[in-house]
Image (spheres, helix red, strand yellow):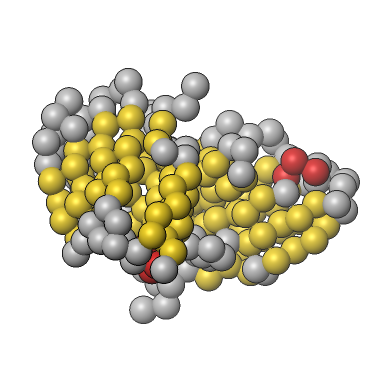
Length: 115
Length: 112
């Protein structure tokens, strides 16, 4: 079974621009979560989508948004980029497993550099 | 204040040595997970512990969940270069079971 794929893997943007990142979950997984990883703040939760609906949102400004399509693929968008948005953006997919803790499967990430 | 504090932050050891990584919190958790992240990749789940005092083994890795379910440790026996990476503990929530809160991370380097 193919893993979580993210495109593009690397991206360089200029301050003020916007960017869209894409994530394709593992086949059959309906939940997609996005995380931001930086050296200073570590891994932080951005938001989670399930069945095309945002189910949870982390503590990030409104410049960060996302959506999920009917085939469970997800995109996240960052508008008006700031230097501090430079980070590794990770997507994870999972499938609710009843009473057991979620097992999230991560993609390789998109490395975004803002100059 | 971080929900999950890991120690040490960095660890550089030689092949064959043993090491222990700690994940501590003042909060009680229903479960705790450990991930390993290699350069250029996303985190990979190693284990989930759910019962206070639980010990799980994965080859040379031994994971323990504290009796009070506030802390956990990861012990690696006879470390190998392939163990190099960022080790992260994580818990579900807070507030929802559909997000992970990660610890501060321990970066391990094992040299020959």
